[in-house]
Image (cartoon, rainbow, N blue to C red; front, side):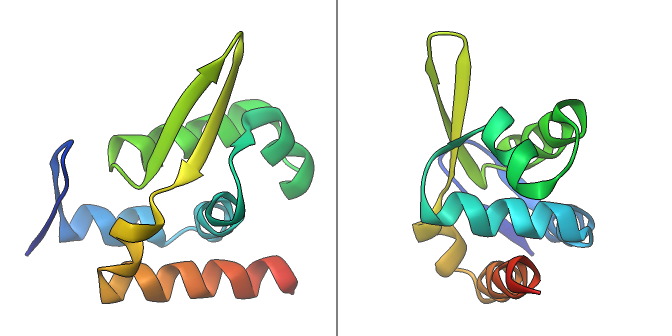
Length: 102
């Protein structure tokens, strides 16, 4: 089974691999609320910018995050419509929100 997006088709096994890491779930949840830069995400997650950048890149490749550039800063936002349309991804988003509050 695959999730079809305008960008690409992501195998379900790849989605599970992406969603098996708590940091990516938190990132999805934070970006579902508002567009955030990598530096803002690094601060909120108390993680390094390179680590956050790797997580962002993986989620962008899977078409779970939308991105826009503003000067030298990259802002990312969760594609909430795509995520909520898929029960597995919606559950992952809910878990990310729970992890953010823990």
